[in-house]
Image 1: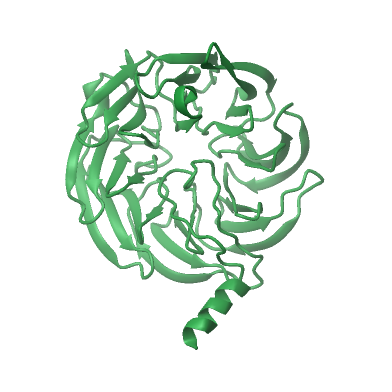
Image 2 (image 1 turned 120 degrees about the vertical axis):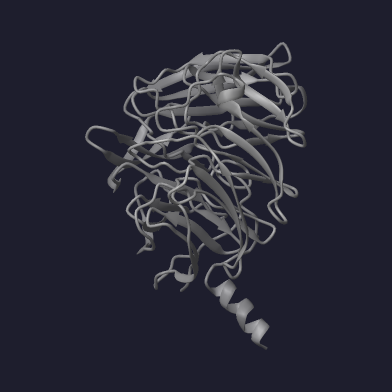
Length: 409
């Protein structure tokens, strides 16, 4: 009877019709979407558990009943990876490693989000250290100081590329000469291939297509580059240089269109094509006003993309609805954050927005205008992206909290 009551409560609160892990940056499909549904709540989401953690902007991920978080060790030039029981928050293991000294006005902890693949966890630290861990107990399988190995210069705000698992490879934007993008064997860390001379950006890559048309797309400091995942050969490149060298958002795809954005350059819309049996691309539009700082846009339906644009001086964050094919703005809502708000699409095409003030918002996307369904203050200031898994929301804030929330009625 108790189990039946729990199931009915879960269904009544909109919980889950389909559950999924959140095993990497931007979730199971690496596009900021989840198959799970979250119904509008009347009461603030319940705090299920909370843990004190180290500093960082790296987002939590969830896989196989565990929550993994990358953080800086307090008062040490070290970073740590910790695993928590997703249900109770109990810490299961924590492992640390030494890194070089790193200072920044906007945080000294890891920025890249880890990725889980089977029984292995991959992290990329703020000083460029790539590590493979065992998810069961934290055993370190291999580790590479990529900046040292490939003679690359670290970014002003630190290495930020969230690792991409592609087949037997793990890929990151290192930024060295001849090693802009490096593919490592995910089992032993050996270099499978390396390519390009572009310096790194703060962006993370995506993969799309099948067979001979499979491609991985990076937004480097110089622009978009599409690569053959098997050998690293270049399919196509489109220049896109930000004046502040702060390209931070992940490219997003809707149908045959790809959108890329940065904080001073604005956004471009790129048509994905096939020529002579290989991936190709052509820029279709540019909108200088669509300046995403470090919030990755999210697509909804077949025509629209929702994006939080911003500026550095003065800081601002504005939610916009945009036509993907043309770049035309349909509406905007100002002041959804100071610099940033993270977007996440649920299984019923609603959008969760975590503002950098710590407010969690649910709204129904529509090309006609903004329609808010629920709002609650759930944490302190944060730049980390939330994770949605098994009906729960996992997030970290700048007050050194890792939290698990259960949306209620």
